[in-house]
Image 1 (cartoon, one colour):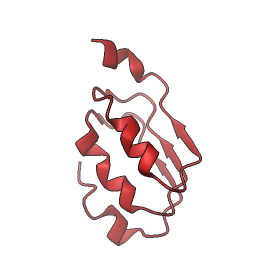
Image 2 (tube, helix red, strand yellow; image 1 turned 135 degrees about the horizontal axis):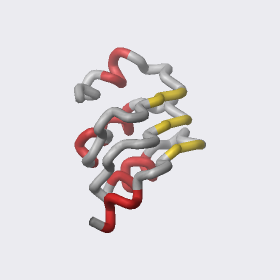
Image 3 (cartoon, rainbow, N blue to C red; image 1 turned 30 degrees about the vertical axis):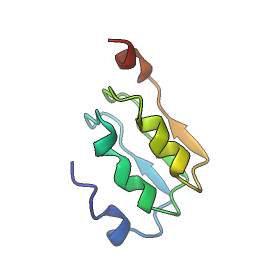
Amino acid sequence: MCLLTLSACLPTLHNLQMTHCKVKTVEDLEHLIECEELSVVDLAHNKLSDPAIIDVFEKMKNLVSSDLFFKYLFFCM
């Protein structure tokens, strides 16, 4: 997954839907912090395995909604 340049290419991105994209670790998402206008993130049905992903969301200034449906099952494995 290449999110390294997401903030440079889409500085006014408000809504990001990444369902079923095999997102697993904090490294897959940490660059979203740079997308300052991002307010909605949909990560439903991914295989998130790193509880530190919550730290990424905490740093996102304008985040209003995040869909983590079907995620936390993998934190316990």
